Image (cartoon, rainbow, N blue to C red; front, side, top):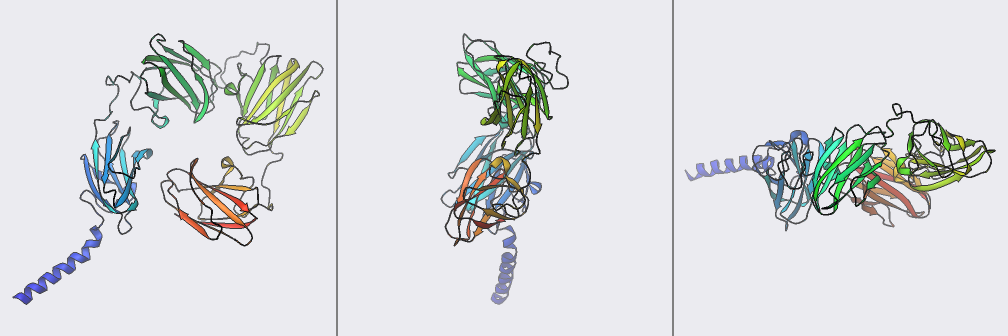
Length: 500
């Protein structure tokens, strides 16, 4: 009998050990494999228990039912003496925020307009974790929150959480230390006039205007109303905040001020406005958007004309200025973003030169003396293009790639380049968002010392700066991955291997 029991017990243990590995990394609320968003476990409760970090199980995904349109407060618990576990939160496939503290518990409130996904991953170690969801945090449209106006959906205190506005009026409420972001539908390529109203006896409310993530201008008067026109080539964001006090505010948007280039009002009877101008364009923030290669304008003494040229990034355009040099002396300055690139200041017409434009090209035309019509011609092909095997260009480079804005796009896992002293090479990698790739840098360390920096969007992550080759390390990349390669000394070929 004892022998029979021993055989049965041994058989049970064999079965147990055979199936155990399949569930060793599965917590009570997990159903492996849940290591991708499309395989996320559906959770209809407010509490999740999981386990992570063993047997290559480094990612757990969950989808929360019923959190659409709310601001849940999510708390992550784990044993921080044994492991460091992090979590990212998504609304549909849009990144919302994360919990990345190395201490437990870690918690925060997140705005989730769509379906809520949780991505749990291990930064180091392994262990159990628990997640608590409090759905009441925030949530719901205007519910009488002291710092929420009729057209707000708190939390809207970050650009990524901006409230979507599809009309021309916004009513809000501002407290000290509260911030409100809005994104305006249909303002791309226009010069809207934006007016801010508030009770300036009780509070001082200010506003900044952005085109995409570029600062355009602001309304910062201590008196109400405050108003101005702004040139918005991209998507228009409004950022409202309290300088002092609190109170209601009201924003009016007049899209006709300037308008689109095809439907703008005919206001060319002004003495100082040419066919391709929409006054006022006397400031870089109000620059007229030009998507062609010729500009016709009119300049008076004391008048300034600004233009922003579409599609000249990374070029060396030749710019030619024509005017009647018998009646007037007109000059022109060229800028790349806000950096001065050069000018045309001859007293004779025509005047021309080539300009290096790594960023967005701005042109500033003004009168040195007199007034009159002018024409600006842009020749984008001159001075631009592939350098074709220069001494400092490797097989996977397209010079000039010496600025982040000119980074070469890489969709593979190997990069071959050539680096000289004073030459920098930038690359942007496809598909590394939300990953932890390992980079290995190879070069001839007898001939040169080549280093590399790694960036997550524009945030510095780390570097490979050993004097020996190969050099390698792993980096956490949440956004778009950029690599910057440069020579510390000497010059030579290099190879970069990416292990995603």
